[in-house]
Image (tube, rainbow over all chains, first blue to last red; front, side, top):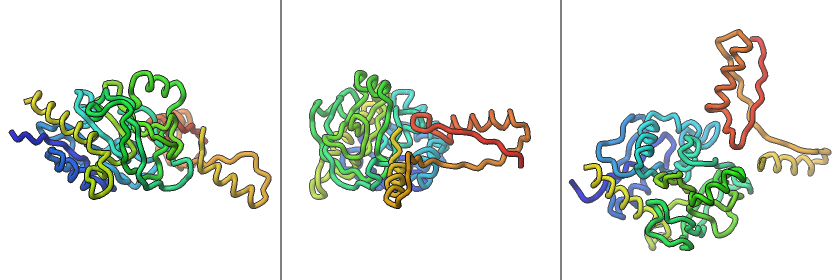
Length: 231
Length: 68
């Protein structure tokens, strides 16, 4: 087998960042494979899954609310339940929240504007495959581009997530009204993570920052370990 | 619950001079059901709300039934 682990990038109708995700994963040592949402199984040997950014199903009803019923989501849920690494970026984060694979929900930005700029996020937890190469307190420059990135959980839920180390990334400044300035959260087991900033757009210094590199490198490394373990 | 759209509409209505106390912007979903039994209809729509139409973390719903 190749030493490039298979990272499946799910393509929903209306996804638009699957191309950049695949390019970034390829550049970082992964073997990206695009998978149409109508599939019901992940390819054998899948090491990790990425739900990319975009506007799946036109953002109808609520962002991610329809995509969670896509045929492929059953397989994604099984993969996550088995401990497989799953990363949701932007719309992918919204989908994972609506699918209840991640806590909370994304609302319209408080300023009711589409926000498209580099932001600084601080690493708050290294207890996920995606951030274990970082140190707590590391600051990563990664762009956001969304109209609905305003993450919400009630006080009780947020407190539990904070104490459980599930708040993984936090904006250095208030970007959109997210409670706790949360930019990214993980599942209790840590193998599922979602974030609004786009690490796949920040892996090449020619195009700005490389703040997304450690997150996607962590994903590729986790995919490699999973493939080796499974085979 | 934070409702950015409601706040924006409220501010605009104030600017127009309307004496506004509060505005909330929501969503109206018209459903036509097969059943004509009100209890059954309500039970079905409650399940629809729980499973898809509303996200209980940020949304609540009210159900009104009308005979077709």
